[in-house]
Length: 389
Image 1 (tube, rainbow, N blue to C red):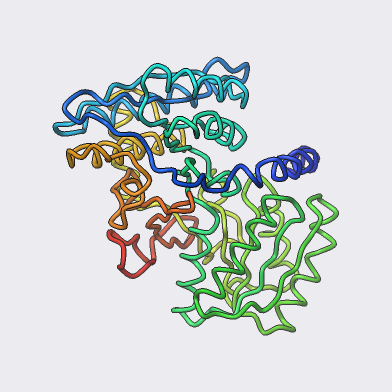
Image 2 (cartoon, helix red, strand yellow):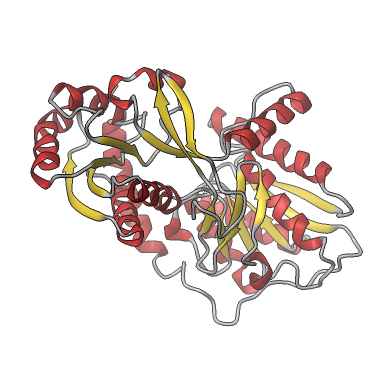
C-alpha cells in the first residue's frame, strides 16, 4: 500500500527545484494578448500530447486526448478547426520544440501539453510569438502569462467543499496533510478556502508520508480534532497514498465519522474499491457534474469502443472553448480577454472559465459516500453566480 511513498520523496526534491525554476516564468508578459485570426477560414489549432513516450501510459493518454479533441470538433456547429497533432514524448524540451514548430506551422493557439514542466516550457517557447497555451495541467505554479490551465485545481475543490461545509454548520475545520509538495499545496488551498468561506481553521496536523509516519500521526490528529472542537477534518491525501490507511486508523482511534465530518481534497471514488473503506462512509468529496461526465464517457465509448482516459475530457473542453469563441466571428477570439470572458464555457464535466492569472474555476458537485456508493448531495452549479461558487 505504501510503496508509493519512497517515490514521492524523490519526486518532492524534483518538484522543489522545478518550482524555483518557474517562479519567474509564470509572470504575465507585459502587453500580452494573443493572435488575430480569420474566422472565415479553418482555425489552426495545435494539440500537444505525450505520444512517442517510452511510457505506455503516456501513449494511451495521447490517443485518448486526441480522440476527445476530435469528438469535440465533430460537435461544433459552423466552426472549422484545423487540428494539428504534435507528439512531445512527455518531455519538456521536446514540448518546447513542438510548440515552436506548431506556431511556425501557423497555429493560433496551443492545446496541451499535459505535464507541468512541459506546459511551462511550451508557454515560454511561444510567449514571444503572441500565442496562448491551454495546458492540461492543474499545477498552478505554471499558470500565468500565456499559459492557462484546464485541469481542475486544488483551489477549485477546496473552495467548493469549504463553502459547503460552512453552509452545513460544519465550517470549523482541521486540516490533516502529508509532508510532501503536493499535499502542502493542498493544505494552503484549503486554508485559503476556509478563510474565504467564513469558516474557521481549527488547526493543521501533518505527517511524514510513510507507513510509520501515518501510524505515529493518527493519535495526534484525533487529539487535535478533539481539543480544537473541530467539526470537520479535511484530508489532503488521495487513494493512491495515505488515505486508505487514514480511513482505517482514524475511526479505530476514536474519530467517529458519524460525529466528525470527513472531507477529501482528492477524488474518493477512484478506484471504486475505495468506496468500501469504513472511514469514508458519510465523507464528502467533490466531482464534476456526474450526468454530463457520464454522457461524455458514453459518447466516447460509442465512437471509439473504449473508455476515455480520466483527463481526456480536458481536450474536449479546450476545443469546446475555442469553438465557442471562434463562433462569435471576431478576429480577437483567441486573445487573453476573450479566453477569460466571465460567462465561461460548457465542458464535459460542467461549466468552467479561465481566469486572468492562468488558473480556472469549475462547477463541481459535492458527493457523499453512502453504503459504499457515491451520492450527489449538492449538485454542480450550471452557471456562474449560482450557489456552489
